[in-house]
Length: 326
Image (tube, rainbow, N blue to C red):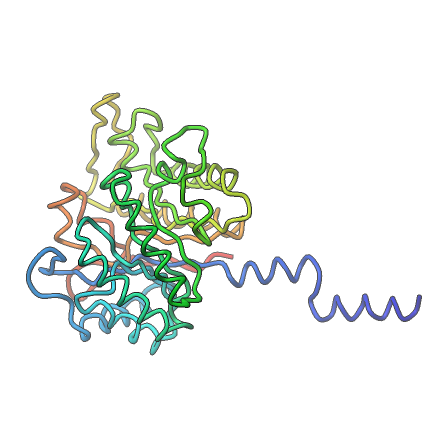
């Protein structure tokens, strides 16, 4: 009995048991920022691509002005692979998306380069995704490309956990009862994007979610996914709120409602309240996005260039007061 008591005391002192498990989960919980260096006049659709110097400047700004030491990146081609070397030098962890779309030849290049960088930076790149919102853009037309990417990474001996990122609706198999998709058995983790702002504009189901209730909406959708994919790690890989045009709103054409108001205050509220709720559950999250991108209005309307927690033009000033949440 005396020996058993000594063993128990030793385990407590060394941090074993429930509290140790919770501590490890807390340590491993990710609080990241989505990072795309297409700032200023740059666009991923044409012209010059981000230089290594610009990438260094943006990451230095992120480290200096924000609490984030983890980023999620969008692609490995066109010089974007320079991000991984820069991140390694700054001890920044990376969730790397291999960008997939409807050009099969370019997809093949992305997969090959993705394998290369995953092996070259095994401690910096901590997770991988075969595409982002490919189903949202194209339906099921390119499911084969997602599978081809996942299979290629595994056959190449890539060791990082693999997924494909998409909206919560796609991961629920477009069902309010949140059924599994065909990728359930193929992925190591589930990455979902959740945006009440866009639900407010387009959805006929979940509408009229103001900034004050956005965090609860994020958690509710995450809970749906956790129930649908028991045993899988689930990460909200994009969430956020636009900071402008100040006081701007959008009208849902299905309901006529306009509950989302774009302000700096509301953006900060959504980011802080969501990370606090995620931390309580020991869940990971990625705020969208680190730096505002001026090219976005071409794809996302007037609000597209206002999602950054840092400005997309020099001196790239960032929102003050954000902190790590535990």
